[in-house]
Length: 184
Image 1 (cartoon, helix red, strand yellow):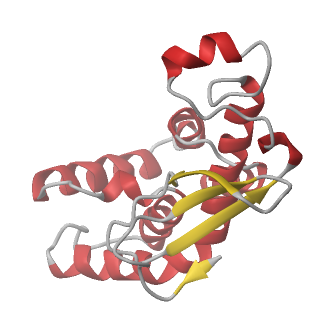
Image 2 (cartoon, rainbow, N blue to C red):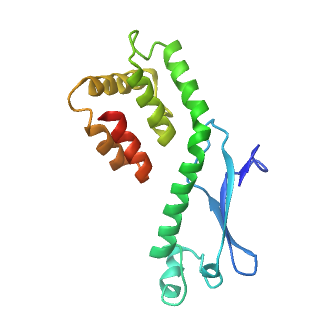
Image 3 (tube, rainbow, N blue to C red):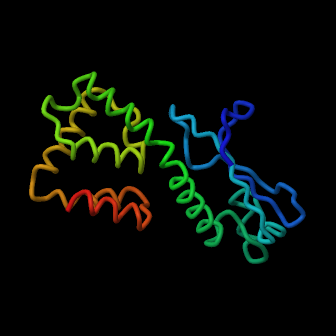
């Protein structure tokens, strides 16, 4: 569920609901709103949470034999899938912010004077897939990143970028395909 504004000044959260429609646990989602204002909540209702133990890690070892815990493989798998779904849902929303990033890079002369459309498209695509890559960079770091991307795009080795990004970001098959089309 996406909200127009932050709810009670709290971070976006996952809510785990049991079969009786009772909240068993809540925790912040993996997306940290860094200026893009993508406020959201994810509600997960399942029988799985009826006997689930949300206790601290030290207490989980005893209960892990009996019920599900936050450290078991099913729960980790669920959280990974939820994070992927969130990234997919947020991506169209990030297009606007990617355009703002390109405008900012042009205004601050971070982009080279002669900038090929492929560099703009690469920056936009990477931002839409993982905007966190661009946060907290100082001016020099931004210029270095843009310069390295430009060198890579102009070289015969531009096909290494999808593999590099895949090693750092958990890409969906569609995102992987999009990157491959962009660089081949």
